[in-house]
Structures are given as structure tokens and as C-alpha cells.
Amino acid sequence: MPRIGGKKFLRKTICEAFPQPERFNRYIEVFGGMAWVMLYKEKHADMEVYNDADGELVNLMRCVKFHLPELMRELEGFLNSREMFTDAISQLGSKGLTDIQKAARYFIKMRLSFGANGREFSCSPKNIKGAIDKMEAVREGFSRVVIENKDYDNLIKVYDRQDALFYCDPPYHKTEDFYDVAFCEADHIRLKDRLSSIKGLFLLSYNDDEFVRELYRDYNIRGVERANNLITGKYKEVIITNY
Image 1 (cartoon, rainbow, N blue to C red):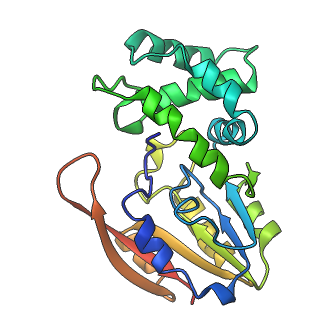
Image 2 (cartoon, rainbow, N blue to C red):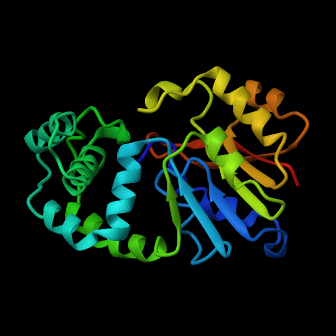
């Protein structure tokens, strides 16, 4: 399922930038999204935590983990249809749906939208069945993972230990309006202040932006490039670490 800011094209580079395995034994994805980095390896640490502030996304992940057969049955009736896309969006805002029904409609909303914006129908071929078939691999990858739906500040505070590695992929600076969950300039600063006080290690992925570079000027900043999944060309990003 596509999602704005997904790390499909950068997951290998990010994992290669992780510290040596003996330096951490708990791995926490603070802005989990589609979990491309989480699922890149069979296991990052003995304890693994997936978190996202988007309750609809977290509900989908929980249903994949705990109720996959029922979710797949719910999705069987959906087609690459503009009417089904708009119905899914409108039904998500209504009461009375089960968690499985909500998860199915959120999946359709994101899978059939243009550029993963969740608002406009994509008008392009989409292999819904192929995407559903891949859910079993996601379920297996999440079999040991703790799933959270918390504010990033509280999550980091709760799971911080000396043997913790936090991977943070926040909404990129000046792209915050593309996300359903509110995130503003003050949040970028609040995240930096929280990470500056942790006992453990962190790795951040961000857009290569003057504000970001200045905010994290006291840490290790490495420029990287990835394919741009909306237009032809490369997109410049940075990887920031405190190790």
C-alpha cells in the first residue's frame, strides 16, 4: 500500500546506517508508516516496536497481525473503482463499522488514491489482489512486534533505554499538510529536544532542508538520494544520527 514518505527506495541505505547490532537490543520505529524499514530484515532486535500516530493505519496493521483471514475476506469484494473508492472514504467517517471493516476501507482509500494522498482517485491500473496476497508476509513480519498508537514524544519517553535504537521518519519539513495527523514546525523542534535527551541511540531520515540541517547541526548528517516515486529524478534526503 502506498503512503506519502514511504521508505521503499531508501530502506537498504537506512538499515546499513544502523549501529552495530551489539549496541542495541530494542528497536523502535517512532513514525512507522508502511514499515518498509521494520520489515526489511527478519529481525532488528530482541524487542521491536512499531508506532504511528495515525489511528486508521495502526488499526490496519493490527488487523493484518491478528485478523488477516477476516480482513482478506472483507477486501474480496473491492475493485479498482472510483465509486468504491469514494464510498470507502465516506464510510470511514461513519459510525458502526467494525475494526476489520475500517481497516479494509482505509486500505482501499490509500491503495486507489493518487500519490497516496487519500483524497483523489488515481485513474490508473491497481493490482488489488496482488497487494492483498502480500499481507501474509506482513503478518509474519509483525508476529513479534509490539504495535503502538502514541504521540512520538511520549513513545520515546516510555521506551528509552541505553540499549534502545529509535528510527524516526517524521513528516518532512514543509510537507506536513500532506498527512492526516497534525504536525507543525514546533513539532520538529519538540522532536529534536526529546531526542537530544535520550539515553539510547537515534537515526533520523529527513528531507535535505536548511531548517533541518540547522536544527541538527550538532549531530552527524549524511546526504543521500533516492528515486522520486512521483516524478522522474532524484530526491535529496539526509540521515542524521547521534552515534
